[in-house]
Image (cartoon, rainbow, N blue to C red; front, top):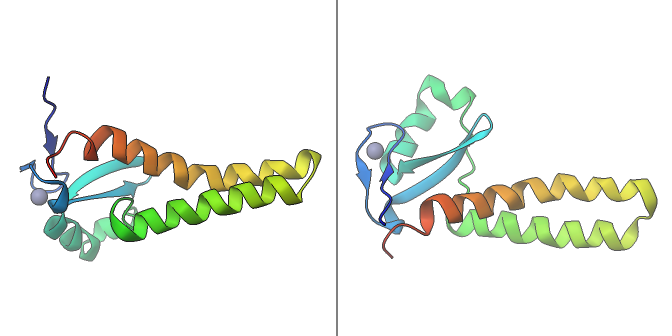
Length: 108
Ligand SMILES: [Zn+2]
């Protein structure tokens, strides 16, 4: 059972994890070749395309920070104020989704 990942811009297959950039396009997570992502960021699509990739070093940093702030808000706030922590859960869920759906199926 091998799933294939196709680039949002050129529709070509993405074979390696190193060549994959996932990003948020409105509410959806879309896969790109690294180069195609850079090109789409310069196009009109950039209005809807998040310029912060979900995967890679910066994505991992965002996810780790979100986790930290989520735990922090749960510790510092009581009752209904704890709902603030949900805001930090969103980037974390996107990170997990990107990993499970795209990164996991690609070769290292
Ligand atoms: Zn491409």
